[in-house]
Length: 426
Image 1 (cartoon, one colour):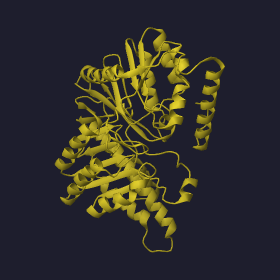
Image 2 (tube, one colour; image 1 turned 90 degrees about the vertical axis):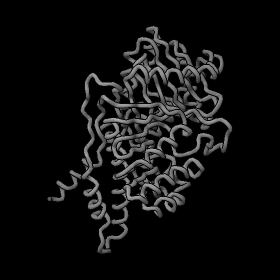
Image 3 (tube, rainbow, N blue to C red; image 1 turned 135 degrees about the horizontal axis):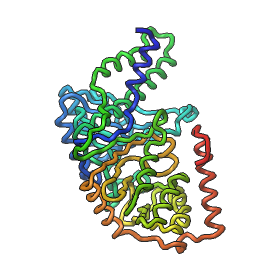
Image 4 (cartoon, one colour; image 1 turned 135 degrees about the vertical axis):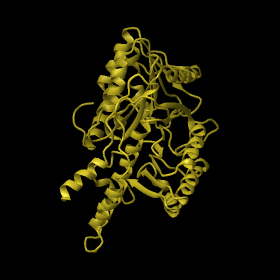
């Protein structure tokens, strides 16, 4: 086969599926790692053929070591286990991971590693793998905002008594194939990038790592392709929506904005990092003005002060149009979830800020199911009940100072995006 045709096939193999609603799924909400990790380890233990896992942070603590053990045991009994972690998010634990996983026949890859200082000079290093995915045998998948780290451990603030608020979903059914295709693509991209870097360093050698990488991908490509066809009138319709830097740059943002524009009763959003673009803010303001109950759940216990200041710069603008804003104080907030009306809900890894909406690789599940939306809405109501509602104009002032604060944050966000190669205003 000609080299150009082979390269085209490999590129197709590393592509992610186009978003589409698929029916006949079972999607279950999981709150926190205490709920997620046991279910994930059970699925890994039951896997017969393959396991794919992608995460931003893979830490070294008891919860993470439990996942490591499950992966090692699966690989030991002949299951093909592939793990990809982000080179920035997991930088501090890469040595541990390599020893624990590669020593147990797990195929570990690092997405855009930063092990040498000059790696920061390479293009695209501001764009990180922020997805949290695990899929076993294309039949059971896990998607959400939960990294492989204990809920009570914050990497900047240490251990806490109360677990952070975070969510994931367990998926059984056709949609798991889409998650499988994406997790496999993330591993393959990292694998090919490493092989090409090694080939550049070893041009004088006979062995050609990139060719070896392509040979491996040819073998892996034999798996089934993702099923992205919609199934009408079947229960638990859901879509797996990915934000990448290829074909689906604004897929997650568009799904949010379209749902908010159609909202008639309620829009509840929980997210730790919030600085949306103009179209997103316009949709929120318009929904509130037409009588929709719009509530935002933000950080009250702050982990990154700059991110909190960016979100608070928008409080006055949104509250002046009727948007209610709550700050969650019992613990750190890490959830990226939303409910719109009584049959639209999303759970995933994407924040609502420039990094997630325009730079990072993200993944959300959107569920069109009344029972699922009701379950998540109940979690929202419980979180709002223990949160502090920010009164308009009281905590953050207004007038010229508020405008200057927004202008400064907008300027900083646009500078960051231009450094990352994104042009145009946000």
